[in-house]
Length: 113
Length: 114
Image 1 (cartoon, rainbow over the protein chains, first blue to last red):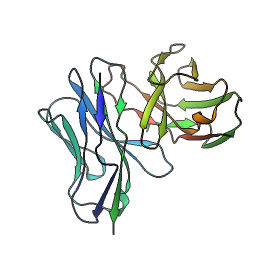
Image 2: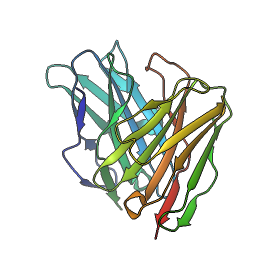
Image 3: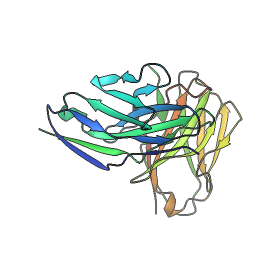
């Protein structure tokens, strides 16, 4: 079975500071990992994904994520947060043996001016 | 750019009504998905389709059905709406049946069942 955990419902960070949104996963095979962002009253937008290769993945809007197989984590990071980064962030995982993406419960990021 | 559109942004229905939610994608994607989004539960997959006239149950199919008569259109049907189906419904599409491809989402339909 596959699962994904986002241990923090809410993350607050000051503008200009680095931000981290945490994600851990559990799969039986090799994972495909995704981050999506949802701005208010909008659908989800793709940020980045890890399929294979380099453990550090760079995505849209200056975000990056590091795949850590030993810790089964895929944390989302950004060196300097912007107020416009405030949104709901979802981590998703797909076990290569299954058909579907499985989403976490989401983390609400608030960047404080 | 991929565009996924949903027929309504907001919808209010009464208990027992039959409800149709429509989703259209314009990029000739093979795969289409219906999710519901609830606070604290994230996104949960209701149904998906890998091809015309094909459907597969997701994690929470009870109380829902789907229809895919054309490649670009995927409809979610609530046969008899109930209050516990009040939720945000998100449609998505993707190209690669192998599962590594990005899913592209519509803006969502917020359904309220009274």
